[in-house]
Image (cartoon, rainbow, N blue to C red; front, top):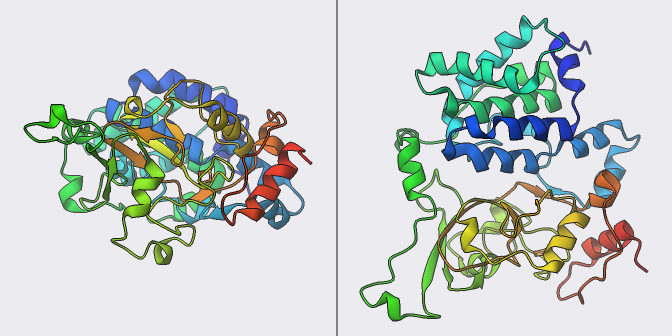
Length: 347
Ligand code: FES
C-alpha cells in the first residue's frame, strides 16, 4: 500500500503531539464543540492504535486488553463523531481534507495551523463560522491518520443526524445542554427526591433517563428499561450505559461528559487510580470530562456520550500504572478482573 506525502507528514506526530496541537486549537474551537472534540480524542487514542498496528499478534493483544465493543475507527469513519455539533459539516470537512491531502507539499507545516486552514476552506463552503469546523476537521485528520487515506476517501461522508436536529444553531444546542430540570414550585424544599435528566445523545429527543439526586449515573441508567439494550450493544446488561462490576474495577462504564461536569461528584482516589489502569486519559481536574459512570454521582442535569468500546490497556500503552489494590469482586467480571490483575502485577 502506498503512503501519500500527507500520511507521511501525519505519521510524524505521536499522541502527545496531537493533544498539544489540540490544546493550542481549543480557544479557536466553538464552545459547542470544545469539550466534545477533546472527548473524541480520548475515545480513539493514537497510542493504542499504534500499538495494535505494530504488534505481531493483534488478536492476542485485543484479548489481553479485554477490548469489547466497536473499537475500530475504520468501521465508523463517518459516525464516530456524531456527538459533535460539527458532525453536520462532516461532508464538507472531509472533502476539504481530501483536497488538501492530495496537493500537500509542506512537510514542515505546523499541525494546528494546517487544521485551522483546512477548517477555513470548509467553512467557506458551508457559509458558517470556521470555529464550528475546527473540531470536526481535527477529528477528520486523526481519522485519516488512523485509517489511511484510501479508506478515508472511500467513506461515504454520511451524516447521522435527522433534519430537525441538524437545523439547530450552536447557541440553541448550548442553551439546552445539561439544563437543570424544574423541581416544581416547592422545589427548593426538596432534598433527596429531586430528579435530574441525563441526556446520552443530544441528537435524539428520547435519549435520556432520570436520576435521583446524588445517584451514580450507572444506577439511573440501569432503571431505564425502555429498550432491549442488550440487543443494541451486547455490553449493555442493564440500561444504555455498559456496566459490569459497578466498583471501578473493570473499566466498562467510561463516559464523556459534554455538559454538566461541574454537577458531578469529584473524582475519588479509586476512580483516579483505576482510570490509569484502564488507559483512559481522564485529566487531573477534580471534575474532568472523562468519568466512570458507576462512580460519578450527579446533583444536576448532565449531557454525556457513551463510547462504543472499552478495554484495559493503561500499563502496556502508557506504562504509568502503579500497583493497585482491587476492590472485592461484586459481579461476574472475572475476566476483566484477571486482565487488570495481570496489567498491574498484583498477585
Ligand atoms: S462498571 Fe466496572 S468500572 Fe464501572
